[in-house]
Length: 113
Length: 112
Image (cartoon, rainbow over all chains, first blue to last red; front, side):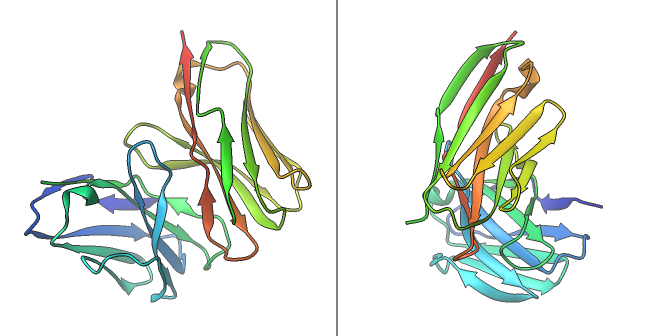
Protein backbone atom coordinates (compact mmCIF):
# COMPACT_ATOMS: atom_id res chain seq x y z
CA UNK A 1 0.00 0.00 0.00
CA UNK A 2 1.70 3.19 -1.22
CA UNK A 3 -1.22 5.52 -0.68
CA UNK A 4 -1.83 8.58 1.42
CA UNK A 5 -5.53 9.25 1.91
CA UNK A 6 -7.19 12.51 2.88
CA UNK A 7 -10.71 13.28 4.00
CA UNK A 8 -12.85 15.10 3.21
CA UNK A 9 -12.16 15.84 -0.46
CA UNK A 10 -14.02 19.13 -0.24
CA UNK A 11 -14.94 21.28 2.74
CA UNK A 12 -16.89 24.52 2.95
CA UNK A 13 -16.89 26.26 6.31
CA UNK A 14 -17.87 29.59 7.79
CA UNK A 15 -15.44 31.79 9.63
CA UNK A 16 -16.91 30.80 13.01
CA UNK A 17 -16.90 27.06 12.38
CA UNK A 18 -14.56 24.42 13.75
CA UNK A 19 -13.61 21.61 11.41
CA UNK A 20 -10.83 19.07 10.97
CA UNK A 21 -8.92 17.62 8.06
CA UNK A 22 -7.72 14.05 8.26
CA UNK A 23 -4.75 12.31 6.66
CA UNK A 24 -3.87 8.63 6.89
CA UNK A 25 -1.06 6.41 5.64
CA UNK A 26 -0.34 2.72 6.19
CA UNK A 27 3.16 2.57 4.75
CA UNK A 28 4.89 2.58 8.13
CA UNK A 29 6.18 6.09 7.49
CA UNK A 30 7.38 8.00 10.55
CA UNK A 31 7.20 11.54 9.18
CA UNK A 32 4.08 13.37 8.04
CA UNK A 33 3.60 16.82 6.58
CA UNK A 34 0.91 19.44 5.94
CA UNK A 35 1.19 21.75 2.94
CA UNK A 36 -1.03 24.60 1.78
CA UNK A 37 -1.41 25.33 -1.93
CA UNK A 38 -3.10 28.38 -3.41
CA UNK A 39 -4.26 28.41 -7.02
CA UNK A 40 -1.45 28.60 -9.57
CA UNK A 41 1.18 28.46 -6.81
CA UNK A 42 3.44 25.68 -5.56
CA UNK A 43 2.74 23.96 -2.23
CA UNK A 44 4.00 25.69 0.91
CA UNK A 45 5.11 23.69 3.91
CA UNK A 46 3.08 24.28 7.09
CA UNK A 47 4.01 21.57 9.60
CA UNK A 48 6.24 18.52 9.92
CA UNK A 49 5.68 15.68 12.39
CA UNK A 50 8.58 13.37 13.10
CA UNK A 51 7.91 10.24 15.14
CA UNK A 52 4.58 11.75 16.22
CA UNK A 53 6.20 14.91 17.51
CA UNK A 54 5.90 18.34 15.92
CA UNK A 55 9.34 19.16 14.54
CA UNK A 56 8.67 22.07 12.19
CA UNK A 57 6.05 24.82 12.34
CA UNK A 58 6.52 27.31 9.53
CA UNK A 59 5.11 30.23 11.53
CA UNK A 60 1.55 29.13 10.78
CA UNK A 61 -1.26 31.13 12.48
CA UNK A 62 -2.71 29.48 15.58
CA UNK A 63 -6.10 29.08 13.90
CA UNK A 64 -4.47 26.01 12.32
CA UNK A 65 -3.74 23.34 14.91
CA UNK A 66 -2.05 20.08 13.87
CA UNK A 67 -2.29 16.82 15.74
CA UNK A 68 -0.61 13.44 15.25
CA UNK A 69 -2.49 10.88 17.41
CA UNK A 70 -0.40 7.97 16.11
CA UNK A 71 2.16 7.19 13.42
CA UNK A 72 -0.50 6.56 10.76
CA UNK A 73 -2.78 9.50 11.34
CA UNK A 74 -2.41 13.26 11.00
CA UNK A 75 -5.12 15.81 11.66
CA UNK A 76 -5.37 19.53 11.00
CA UNK A 77 -7.88 21.30 13.22
CA UNK A 78 -9.34 24.51 11.84
CA UNK A 79 -10.95 27.29 13.83
CA UNK A 80 -11.91 30.90 13.05
CA UNK A 81 -10.44 30.76 9.57
CA UNK A 82 -10.38 33.67 7.14
CA UNK A 83 -11.48 33.64 3.48
CA UNK A 84 -7.82 33.90 2.45
CA UNK A 85 -7.25 30.49 4.05
CA UNK A 86 -9.22 28.93 1.20
CA UNK A 87 -6.80 26.61 -0.58
CA UNK A 88 -5.90 23.02 -1.34
CA UNK A 89 -4.43 21.36 1.75
CA UNK A 90 -2.05 18.55 0.97
CA UNK A 91 -0.76 15.89 3.30
CA UNK A 92 2.45 13.96 2.66
CA UNK A 93 4.44 11.27 4.39
CA UNK A 94 7.97 9.89 4.21
CA UNK A 95 9.68 6.82 5.58
CA UNK A 96 11.85 8.89 7.88
CA UNK A 97 12.06 12.63 8.50
CA UNK A 98 13.60 14.99 5.97
CA UNK A 99 15.43 14.80 3.69
CA UNK A 100 13.83 11.93 1.78
CA UNK A 101 11.18 11.24 -0.84
CA UNK A 102 7.70 12.33 0.19
CA UNK A 103 4.43 10.76 -0.93
CA UNK A 104 1.47 13.07 -1.34
CA UNK A 105 -2.24 12.60 -0.79
CA UNK A 106 -4.97 13.92 -3.13
CA UNK A 107 -5.65 16.97 -0.96
CA UNK A 108 -8.67 18.62 0.64
CA UNK A 109 -10.16 21.60 -1.17
CA UNK A 110 -11.12 24.07 1.56
CA UNK A 111 -13.41 27.04 0.99
CA UNK A 112 -13.94 29.55 3.81
CA UNK A 113 -17.06 31.70 3.43
CA UNK B 1 18.73 31.82 -0.68
CA UNK B 2 17.64 28.34 -1.73
CA UNK B 3 15.40 28.73 -4.77
CA UNK B 4 14.02 26.63 -7.59
CA UNK B 5 13.02 28.18 -10.92
CA UNK B 6 11.07 26.59 -13.75
CA UNK B 7 10.97 27.78 -17.32
CA UNK B 8 8.68 28.18 -19.17
CA UNK B 9 5.70 28.96 -16.94
CA UNK B 10 3.34 27.65 -19.61
CA UNK B 11 3.79 25.60 -22.75
CA UNK B 12 1.37 24.55 -25.48
CA UNK B 13 2.39 21.93 -28.04
CA UNK B 14 0.64 19.78 -30.64
CA UNK B 15 0.19 16.11 -29.94
CA UNK B 16 3.16 13.93 -30.84
CA UNK B 17 5.86 16.50 -30.15
CA UNK B 18 8.85 15.79 -27.97
CA UNK B 19 9.32 18.48 -25.35
CA UNK B 20 11.65 19.60 -22.58
CA UNK B 21 10.77 21.27 -19.31
CA UNK B 22 13.51 23.09 -17.44
CA UNK B 23 14.30 23.45 -13.77
CA UNK B 24 17.19 25.35 -12.19
CA UNK B 25 18.32 25.54 -8.58
CA UNK B 26 20.64 27.92 -6.79
CA UNK B 27 22.81 25.57 -4.71
CA UNK B 28 24.52 22.43 -5.98
CA UNK B 29 24.45 20.85 -2.49
CA UNK B 30 21.22 18.99 -3.04
CA UNK B 31 20.05 15.71 -1.56
CA UNK B 32 17.67 14.85 -4.40
CA UNK B 33 15.42 16.36 -7.04
CA UNK B 34 11.90 15.25 -7.77
CA UNK B 35 9.51 15.90 -10.65
CA UNK B 36 5.79 15.91 -9.91
CA UNK B 37 2.68 16.09 -12.01
CA UNK B 38 -0.43 17.88 -10.78
CA UNK B 39 -3.80 17.82 -12.49
CA UNK B 40 -6.14 20.78 -11.78
CA UNK B 41 -7.45 20.67 -8.21
CA UNK B 42 -5.72 17.37 -7.51
CA UNK B 43 -2.79 16.20 -5.43
CA UNK B 44 0.80 15.65 -6.54
CA UNK B 45 1.89 12.54 -8.38
CA UNK B 46 5.58 11.76 -8.18
CA UNK B 47 6.99 11.10 -11.64
CA UNK B 48 10.73 10.72 -11.15
CA UNK B 49 13.18 11.08 -8.28
CA UNK B 50 16.87 11.66 -8.96
CA UNK B 51 19.32 11.22 -6.12
CA UNK B 52 22.23 13.65 -6.01
CA UNK B 53 24.64 10.88 -7.11
CA UNK B 54 22.59 10.08 -10.22
CA UNK B 55 22.61 11.76 -13.63
CA UNK B 56 19.22 10.68 -14.93
CA UNK B 57 16.12 8.60 -14.38
CA UNK B 58 13.68 7.18 -16.91
CA UNK B 59 10.09 6.02 -16.70
CA UNK B 60 8.26 5.16 -19.90
CA UNK B 61 8.15 8.26 -22.10
CA UNK B 62 9.70 10.42 -19.38
CA UNK B 63 13.38 11.07 -18.84
CA UNK B 64 14.76 13.41 -16.20
CA UNK B 65 18.37 14.54 -16.09
CA UNK B 66 20.36 16.21 -13.35
CA UNK B 67 23.46 18.39 -13.67
CA UNK B 68 24.43 19.57 -10.21
CA UNK B 69 27.43 21.58 -11.38
CA UNK B 70 25.26 23.83 -13.52
CA UNK B 71 22.26 23.68 -11.14
CA UNK B 72 19.91 22.34 -13.77
CA UNK B 73 17.47 19.52 -14.39
CA UNK B 74 15.37 18.77 -17.44
CA UNK B 75 12.27 16.66 -17.87
CA UNK B 76 11.99 15.24 -21.37
CA UNK B 77 8.60 13.98 -22.53
CA UNK B 78 8.61 11.94 -25.71
CA UNK B 79 5.70 11.73 -28.14
CA UNK B 80 3.42 13.95 -26.06
CA UNK B 81 -0.27 13.09 -25.69
CA UNK B 82 -3.30 15.18 -24.65
CA UNK B 83 -3.35 13.15 -21.41
CA UNK B 84 0.02 14.67 -20.54
CA UNK B 85 -1.68 18.05 -20.07
CA UNK B 86 -1.07 19.08 -16.45
CA UNK B 87 1.20 21.25 -14.33
CA UNK B 88 4.68 19.84 -13.81
CA UNK B 89 6.50 20.78 -10.63
CA UNK B 90 10.18 20.44 -9.93
CA UNK B 91 11.18 20.16 -6.26
CA UNK B 92 14.58 20.04 -4.63
CA UNK B 93 15.68 18.89 -1.21
CA UNK B 94 18.82 20.78 -0.28
CA UNK B 95 21.34 19.19 2.07
CA UNK B 96 20.96 22.17 4.37
CA UNK B 97 17.46 22.52 5.72
CA UNK B 98 16.08 19.30 4.28
CA UNK B 99 12.80 20.82 3.17
CA UNK B 100 11.20 20.23 -0.21
CA UNK B 101 11.60 23.48 -2.18
CA UNK B 102 9.23 23.73 -5.14
CA UNK B 103 9.52 25.64 -8.38
CA UNK B 104 6.52 27.61 -9.64
CA UNK B 105 5.63 24.89 -12.12
CA UNK B 106 5.17 24.62 -15.87
CA UNK B 107 1.60 24.37 -17.11
CA UNK B 108 1.62 22.05 -20.12
CA UNK B 109 -1.15 21.82 -22.68
CA UNK B 110 -0.95 19.19 -25.40
CA UNK B 111 -3.41 19.87 -28.22
CA UNK B 112 -4.97 16.98 -30.19
